[in-house]
Structure formats: C-alpha cells, structure tokens
Length: 376
Ligand SMILES: Cc1cc2nc3c(=O)[nH]c(=O)nc-3n(C[C@H](O)[C@H](O)[C@H](O)COP(=O)(O)OP(=O)(O)OC[C@H]3O[C@@H](n4cnc5c(N)ncnc54)[C@H](O)[C@@H]3O)c2cc1C
Image 1 (cartoon, helix red, strand yellow):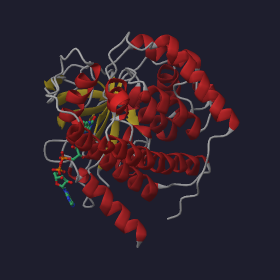
Image 2 (image 1 turned 180 degrees about the vertical axis):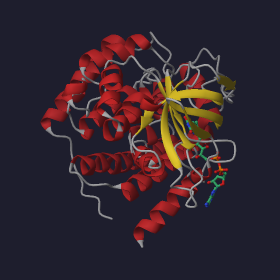
Image 3 (image 1 turned 180 degrees about the horizontal axis):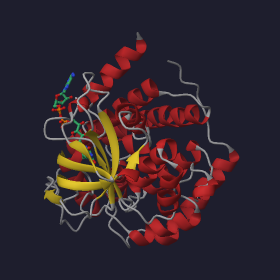
C-alpha cells in the first residue's frame, strides 16, 4: 500500500471557489439548520439546483446527462456541501452509488431510464443490503426473488434502510437461487418502493429522526427488466457498489460544524487544553483528508484502492468519534437538540449519532479484516 501525496490543481481549486460562492447564496449562514455530514435532511429544491449546475452524476457519461468529470472533482463538490451541513439526503445515495452502479452494470435501457433523472437530482434511492440476520455477513441475506411470468416475486425483510420512507427505488440484494456457493445465488433488483406489497416501517433514531427503516417485501412483483446486471452476479456487483461508499469526505467530516460552532462561541477565550485539541484535530484532519483525496486520485488513475479506502474509512470515522469525545470535555454544558445555541444543538445531535459513524457502511472491525487481508 502506498499513498502518494496529491494537491488540488488550479482547475479543481476554481471549482471549489465556484461551489463556495454558490453555497454562500443558497445556504447563507443563519438561514437554515445545518445537518451533520450525510445525515442532513432533504431538500428537493437544492438537489435540483445542484443537478442544474452539473454537480450530480459528475462522473457519469454525458450521453446519460452526466458530466464525465473526475472523482476528485466530485470530492471537491461533496466536501464543500458536507462542510456546510447542506441537506443532501434527497439525492445522496443515487449520486454516490446507485447511479454509478447502474452505469457500470445496467442495461442500456436501465441507463437511459435512470441516469438522466439521477443527474437532475430527481430520484431518491435507498440501499437494500442489510437484513435482521445479515449485516457484516452480508452473503447470508435471505430476501428471496422467485422467477414468475415477466419478472420476479420478491419476499423478505431489509433493515436499517436509510431514507426508504422518501425513496423512489431501492437496489435490493436478494437470493435468486440456492446455489451451493452462497455468493453465487445472489442478484440485485431495482425495486420500486411504491409497488404493491412494499411496507416501510420507520425506526426512530436516538436523535429523534426517522430516516432509518425496516422494509418488508411481501410478494412484490419486480419486472424482469429491473434486474441489475446479470442474475447470480449480485455479490460481485454489490462489492463494487460498496467501494463507492467507503472513503469519501463523508467519512471524516461529520463533526466539522460542531468544531466550527465551538470556535464561533468560545473562540475568543480558548484555554491551553482547547488550543491543544484544535492543533491535534487540525493536524489529523488534514492527514486523513489527504488519504481520502489520494484515494480519489487513485480511482481517477484507473486503480482499485479498496484496501486504501477501508483504511481511510477506519481512520476517518475513529477520528470523528475522538473529536466528539474530546470536545465534550472542554465545555461544561448539557447539550440539547432544542437549545438556542447552534453549537449546543449540533453537539447534542453529534453525541447521539456518533456511535453510528463506525458502523454504517461496514463496521470498523470488518474494515480491519479487509485491510489485514490486503496487506498479506
Ligand atoms: C446510520 C446507519 C445507516 C445505515 N444505512 C443502511 C442502509 O441504508 N442500507 C443498508 O443495507 N444498511 C444500512 N446500515 C446497516 C449497516 O450496514 C450495518 O449495521 C453494518 O453493516 C453492521 O451490520 P449489523 O448491524 O448487522 O451488525 P453485525 O454484523 O451483527 O455486527 C455486530 C458487531 O459484531 C462485529 N462483527 C461482526 N462480524 C465480525 C467479524 N467477522 N469479525 C470481527 N467483528 C465482527 C461488528 O463489527 C459489530 O461490532 C446502516 C447502519 C447505520 C448505523
């Protein structure tokens, strides 16, 4: 494993300025309630404006509405949006992984049907991987799709499905055969979540939001043309989908606004402990950002840095939790979600959601197995 330090080019910095100027107007400080990282609320209006600017589906082919731009350029845009706590949930999953995975494995018909809508910010996708008895050991999924006239009949339960209550579609990993090799019997279906037989049950999160869901499929008919890629190739496709969600800025930037608002409220009177915290945090933040940026550059060079991505996510999410633990020792407050102080509202939310940062997208223990195997 080798990380070659990289910097943003002049063009990438120009894009960064352009996004900052856009956000200064669209999300002026004090005029919206910022979110934390990708759990930030949804705004169809903002998603559509980002689409109009060409900042969604950035790396997708032009013929489907994409920008044919680089992974680093998407990094630049996403970093700025997350840094502001912009409401991104309407398009987040579609832009980050559903669009790219449809582009990689989908038929021409699926690409023409879905990708232009993804690029315009008009579709919400969910990730249908985890089940009550299949999380880290994803190959044990038991959702089953049986072949029927014209397609499949899908039954089973998915869980922890972020934003399924808002989503138009979910890409569902399911079992289509009882092949002896349990990986070989898996396929991916694009499921319309408004189909008869789909029930979305909200699961309240610690911070009171209900973005989490259980999704129950009872004999849901999925047309054959919504099979993504080839039947039986679901495991390989799913693994490639996971690589889109591992080492982006969303894996280390979640507490950024908590620190920014800490400085807004306490910055004039920092003691030595707070100064040390800031020094340490900025140094580590910069190093982890460098890892994440390098991974993006490697993908642009046509490499597959899966081990480097796992390392970036492990380092980034640990860093996020450590920042939150330390900042709580610096202030003598009982943070509340309804406080009049923006810092305390953000702190309260972060304290409640921080445990999930090292779980979502694959736990750190699992990532460390990936890293260990990759170093052999
Ligand atoms: C905020 C959030 C959003 C999520 N959104 C989605 C979503 O949209 N769609 C979706 O499909 N899923 C989603 N998930 C689910 C997430 O992917 C799973 O929670 C995660 O993969 C872990 O699976 P599990 O919860 O079943 O835990 P388990 O797999 O049961 O793991 C429990 C514990 O055991 C440890 N463990 C398990 N196996 C091993 C092993 N082999 N070696 C060492 N330790 C091990 C794990 O690290 C963990 O600490 C989300 C989760 C969170 C927290």
